[in-house]
Image (spheres, rainbow, N blue to C red):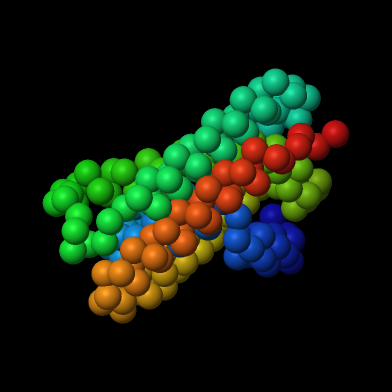
Length: 207
């Protein structure tokens, strides 16, 4: 692959990843609710979700989604309802001082699952990769190895991006000692997730 083309892909992907979307809103909200320890399971869930979306795109699901309004709407509504559910759950979360003990293993699995589901079930992402990745493939070389490299690069950048967002949001939470302030941050994050779910429900299939 042309190094200049790869560098352009890295820059374009970084810009796209930094812009907050439903996944980043989830990352920030969950990290504020659970602290810096949430960074690893959240980043792992986001990475596996993006891997699933990229794989589905390369296997042709992105093209099917672009053509099928029913399938696009199904995935869209599943993702939207799940975001709203997570938002309500986070909004109702009590401060750490009032919480019922929750084992670390269960907490990590819950964070991982929520990040994976929200990232993987975004029909716009699946359809997006179909249009985005091929733009950086050099027609003079073999397409498959280049697509694999681009996919791996995007996954690495997505993992780093999610980790940084989660780490700094978690650090902000760890700095807050007042349980009342933490409770309001949880409610703010929950409201953001509910809003992201509503926005997700309104997205339309590209014609």
